[in-house]
Image (cartoon, rainbow, N blue to C red; front, side, top):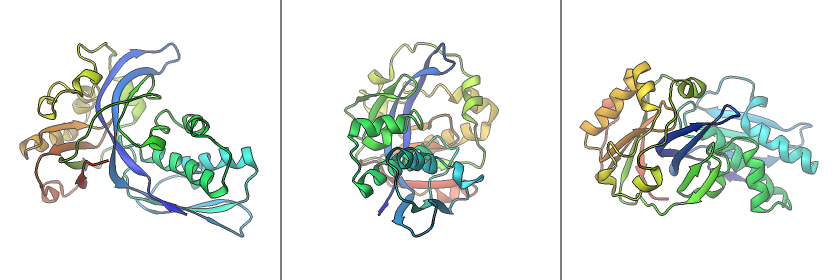
Length: 272
């Protein structure tokens, strides 16, 4: 069985308040994009389940990968036989694109289907939430308004069909904990849920990512990418999540590969 976990971008990201548990309440829209990893699950005669990797190099022990944590949750709950898992990484990590969360969520769904497990969609959501706040989003994979710590979802009527997305990730990485430590929570004058209802042409300077101010100050090259996307004709541009990737929405075909020779660059349609 093979499936293709996809990335997401954040449309707006407001840090609304700090919670007693130390986390932050946010408001954002998760929007799926067609940048994809590849994830395969097959039977094995090996004694243990193993994860092999290809594509973008991931540091660390593969047993600590979120995919393996997802496998262990269901394997231990249902006493499953071992399988062989292969993950080909094409989604950059440390980019604000949710690639690791997508891989874990897809693995849960694949294992349920592969072994015909008696798990409802709601139960699978709970399993995913135990792995990460945004993991359940990738089980739904449609534009969703997220609140709380990014784990409370509401449907949102939004389509970017007809727009072209250009995604640029520089070599720098922004640790999420550092990004959060640099922002001051505040209730926005206009919630993301209202801004997103406006035409895309009105999003600039309205649909805000609260991480940008502090992240751009520390990593000016990320801010420079946003400005250059506007210079190239983007209707809207923003950093995704806590960075370091930046995306631009264009109403026409563009090729910016030469402009960002030292960066990871991906482009594709915004249809979902």
